[in-house]
Image (cartoon, rainbow, N blue to C red; front, side, top):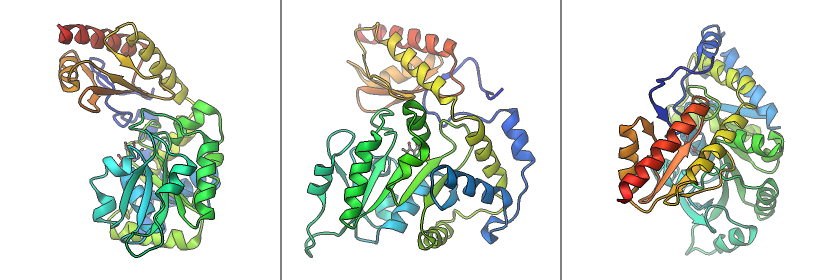
Length: 348
Ligand SMILES: Cc1ncc(COP(=O)(O)O)c(C=O)c1O
């Protein structure tokens, strides 16, 4: 049993809403722990080594959230006043409370067409080395792309960008909070996604179902040292965090391949919703569906919430639906009929 949630609610707001089942809790309770700030938590060390090895990186820095791991990436790869090229709709640009500006002091520029950019678009966005301009020091990738609807940035396209960026002397970070989904959907090995980036963030508390935790993966000892110092500065160094690392270890050991079920449910839900001509439904590549509506998304959100089907508005006339380990086949059918009925009611 990995689920423990209210059966009367179908919660499609995010894959972060999952709660640990009894096996994960048991594994957490048995974790061997120590003071991680003193480098003495054996479970955090085990997780860091294990996940770094999965991605072919040398070091992992455990953080309380993906937001902190991304902020560490900015602090490690860029200096204050630098210019960072990010894909359109990047989580770091939209949903991290301007930490890039406030805490890292960088200028983030969204580049390309929605949601990915090409090598040429990246090259065109690089600032000239003149004093009028901020210094472009970093290129940012996000895979899968959240605001883009869980879309996968093909590994070859990502590689071409990263290789070219590094030839030009830029650092490259991959926000791989949902890289697990890209891996399961394509069969491309985890280490291949990480091959040409300097730093990368992976998250345990989204589709994998751990309650807390992300990890910044880095290669060099200097990046590790800086990331650890910046984590301390931000207040993200934890003590007996092995309890949380144990949940993450359980998640990576048990919950990666099952993501294909979430993807299948997303496809099933999208196909049921397509019966309704009022809804313009995306083609889900992973566990996220975007639906464009002919009326206000907030009205739809509230109408469905009254029937126990939850999701978020993602624009004035767009909603986002996310499948995860608590969403069953029954939930999919129920959500589809509630959403279709609400659409018909709202258009009248
Ligand atoms: C792509 C992406 N990056 C980073 C984050 C931030 O993660 P957290 O909510 O753990 O801070 C999220 C959260 O949904 C995300 O979707």
